Amino acid sequence: MHVEGLLAPSTAEEARAEYDALAPAAKTVVRETAKAMSFDRAEYDERVTADVVETALDALFASLLEVHIGTRAEFETAREQTDLTVDIEGGDDVDRVVWHTAPAADLLVAATFHEAEDAAIGTLRRQAFGKAYRDLL
Image 1 (cartoon, rainbow, N blue to C red):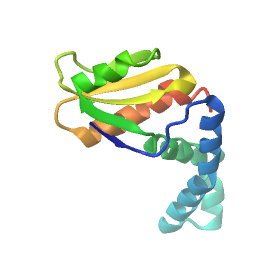
Image 2: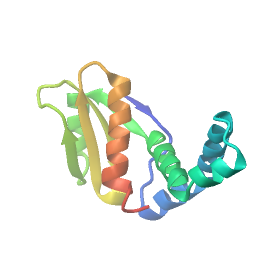
Image 3: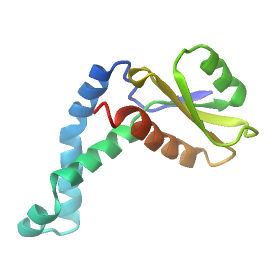
């Protein structure tokens, strides 16, 4: 088993603080992306809305979530060691699992995968954000 990512908030307050701390980075990413796309001031003001920055912030937060990647047996061990509600996507006969523990939402979100580890990690992070954090943040 191995772990990737930086964010593993244990409470709703910690999740909100980490989310808020990423806001300046999200604004910078959006601004620099708009600059690279040669937006002039008028186009920037028209197209770069609060929703655009919020979407960047959501994506940034999700992309930094800590995930565990391991075998089905390793996942089952982790599952047995928690009393969180488990939300698992994928097949029962798949032998690899990626998961994120979200105690702030009383949830362990998981997805099974066969070979495409990077794709599974990205998908799981988006699912974890939507299922565990969107309403908290």
